[in-house]
Amino acid sequence: MINIFEVEETNKMIERENLDVRTITLGISLHDCISDDLNKLCDNIFNKITTVAKDLVKTGEEISTELGVPIVNKRISVTPIGLIGAAACKSTDDFVKIALTLDKAAKAVGVNFIGGYTALAAKGMTKAEEMLIRSIPKALASTERIMSSVVLGSTRTGLNMDGVRLMGDIIKETAEATKDNDSIGCTKLVVLCNAPDDNPFMAGAFHGVTETDSIINVGVSGPGVVKHVLQSVHGESFEVLCETIKKTAFKVTRVGQLVAKEASERLGIPFGIVDLSLAPTPAIGDSVADILCEMGLEQTGAPGTTAALALLNDQVKKGGVMASSYVGGLSGAFIPVSEDQGMIDAVEAGALTIEKLEAMTCVCSVGLDMIAIPGDTPNTTISGIIADELAIGMINQKTTAVRIIPVIGKGVGDNVEFGGLLGYAPIMPVNKFGCADFVNRGGRIPAPIHSFKN
Image (cartoon, rainbow, N blue to C red; front, side, top):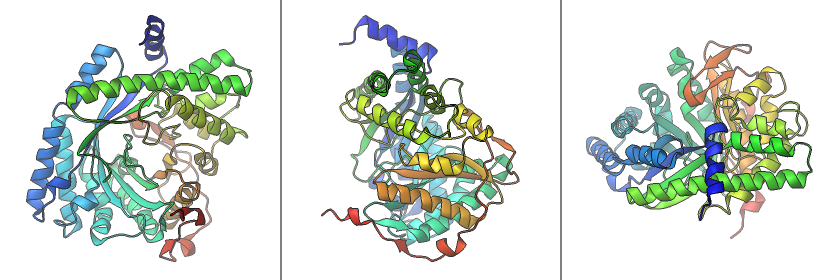
């Protein structure tokens, strides 16, 4: 049972410290929609989504009102379209037609985003998956709510370097296709290693093939809550610091568990997982970077940053797993640049570089996220950045990802405004030395030795 003190404490977190449920994400399997007739496939997809998700937004708003808990986003993830469209799609334009159908369905049910315009190509690409990948620039330029992801590696399979090389081109083409809107298409595209099947957070969300027909996954967020509570233990030992974060993560995750169970019962859809991540927003006071500074750093990016982030990530997980029956997704602490005011400030102060962010991704939940770079960055350099980040995930048996935005027409010293939760970002400098001969080798980087566990 929750006592009155806990109710008051939670209300304080919501009112003063930016506690929210970042998303209720409804995962929907599209396997029963498959047809070799493209028009029939699109009709099946639209009908399935609009039937299963018809009450998602209304239910989320009702729960938010009744419990007094902000639920920022209602989202859908679907089975990777590279699989669903394989029988019907004969060209990239065929896949774009599916993207338009998904976008239409998302608008019909009122969700913020729909994820799953995805290719699973960790070891190699089928013809259908390659067509989907090549369709991404047009698909993202033609839609509003589609989120796209490409899985190009895992600890068990190694890295698909042909795919990595291709994605350098695709990201640049997506930037060009949406250049009139500050290359915003790239904010909806992520490349992953060790992608989880149950991730509720965009842009990497898709409904994994191991999942049931439909599932409710919830993502909670509370950087402001953690930052606020750490102010009360300023200068205390690491033991006190860790215990404080752990207890706070427990309380934050309990809110997510409550919302997830309510949504599951009201929609008649099984509860999947709570993703207990600290996901920042551009709002002042809702920053992971500010937490790191509250731990004792002058600025995020200073020596000690990676250790502080490692501590934070671990304690969030330790506290959260005690508060929910099922924890999954990514879980931990996100470090997107454009979505975190503290990160933006650190970049502008010269304290935070792409190389330091890469080091930080070794110990956090995801990877190089929402980083704006000069629009004239070579395609092969983008591929090299992807390869570096995915290699961290492969070797360390963790999820890593790259969501990078080469903003056409802008360079270092400029800023780019994406709006809403996507925030704004300073253009970050990129290492000027090339890696074309490396990424153009072709083939696959083999799985590390510790992948052989059978």
